Image: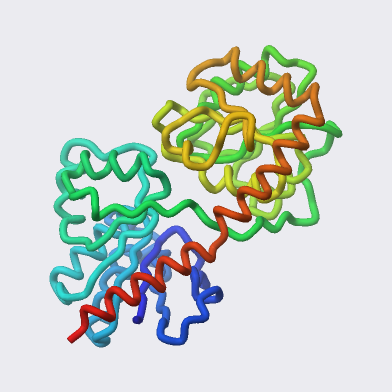
Amino acid sequence: MHFINTADLVSHDWTFLQPYCQDPSISWEFHIGRPRTRMERIVRKPDLARWRAAFQSTRRATQNDRAVLVSHLPRMSAATNLFRKRFCPQVPQIAFAFNFTDLPVGMDYRRLRASLAGIDEFVVFSQYERRLYSEYFGFRPERFRFLPWAMDAPQPGPDNPVSGPESYFCSVGGEGRDYTLLADAMRALPDISMVVVARPHSIRGIDFPPNVKVFTNLPAPQTWRIVQDSAGVAIPLRSDKTTCGHITLVGSMLLGRAMVITDSLGVSDYVEDGVNAHLVPAGDTEAMIAALQGLAHNTATSRDLGSRAVLRAKEKHALAGWVSYFIEKSAQYEARLP
């Protein structure tokens, strides 16, 4: 099969699973919805680059009788599906990485639901999301497939932008985070240092205490260097149903870091309390304080959590799992061909 990918939050040279898939019956193509022209850079609503990539991918699909459209993230999936229904309704589409930080509401929900109708399969990164999106959008549960988040081990860069202290915890990520809770917890822990790497919108208006150093929009190599050099990672999520944090979680596991993370249905497939992380209730500042203190004062516990996290990540979160999924889908779609 020929998998035609559309994505808009990746670099122009992104090739998804192509380097990992050795099946000679599978080929790959990519259309990236990042601005290329002056007009696409100026006009962001509507997102011209996204619509251009969606249009190009579906036109290409009309030229290949073994094509399958693979759209990444919900809004690119909606745009691609609209063109698919217009130009090549017989071509199946997989909505990969179907994930929302905040569910759409009102007119946005109605437009999105209509635009997503007819997609063959939605790939989500937690069992909870299968139920959540099926019920919310009114699509059949069997159309949702859970695949654990998968990735290669992060590649930390040579330079750590943190200049002192020698020992620190860190918190990384820009979506679905409760950095207000983390700031309150760190205010009660003046002898422990924390480094936060976030998006500007996720920390706006938060008063961090002096023992917290904040960076925004760091390159990935510097971010992962901060994680690798840390004493542990805190992932404070907004609620017990937040479906974010998978990249930080799995990346930290692969780097062997001990973690303190909010007990959320969105990450329950990835962590077990006391096995590969410490889980704390959502919104519980005192629990976060106690968990960070526990890791800071017990390096043996921290090492054990990190060691078990690495083993679990290598077993359950390797990219081979995603490759197997596409080999499986290729066989299914080949069987449908006349």
